[in-house]
Length: 340
Ligand SMILES: [Mn+2]
Image (tube, rainbow, N blue to C red; front, side, top):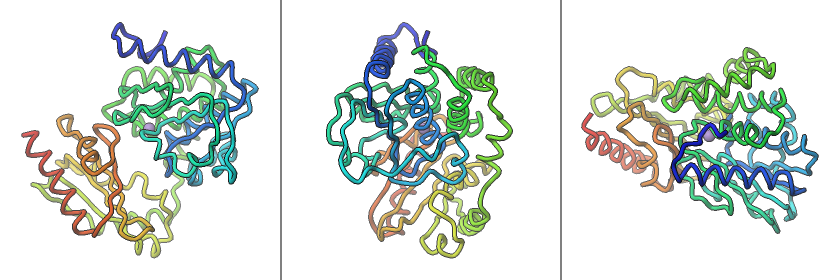
């Protein structure tokens, strides 16, 4: 019984997708598991869980990412099996993308697939473009890892301690340690099942949340120094610049979670982080909403991005101040329209 099964037609469709995916996992031989570049905990955890599952099923499986596994997730079982994309195009029976809202977000990997017989897309982003042949999109799941759990459960596959470790890291990070609005009783039930396999919750959380490099703190210090409040202190935003990365020695992956400091300020409804990319003129924006009436996914979509109602992002090109002005105006407009 699916944890998402209801009598609605949409859920019936999803459940069919799950069934089709289970059949392909059993019947096919060679697999490639992909997720988005700049992977977060949910991306790495879900990707690894599928890789481990397929290995346990005796399949030939690869997992690629344009970017390295962030240091704090390298403790995950067999994280070293995630490699860069193959230098030569390769054939696979099945290509799976997980936690990836658009096919473009798998990056270079897309160009290194020659033939694929089947194409699966498993995701929880409401903005998912349903780019594959089989699309299993569950926007109500707070983490892709929770959908991966459902797949294992419904498929009758073995939930090993290694897989459970990956899924716990995935769900824990995407729910803000089971604290964001999207966290449901199902998330907690799934977490309980994962803990039942004997995983070490304390150790996983210590690795993920209490093992930050000192350089990240130095980057945070610089970002907090630039923090601004606007719109009757309902919008908090800050910047991380190329210069700040150079001065602090922090890596790109170290920006993960920085926005939470802005988000956590009393009275703040929307938090924004502007990040200057290495490529000149490119800015990455992250948005967080603390109010159910404010949908930052729709704000991000105006700038060619997307995500979830409470957490979204986009990449823009242009002059930094001009981008800041445009994006803040859009957020301000969303606040005014919501009449909080
Ligand atoms: Mn996710």
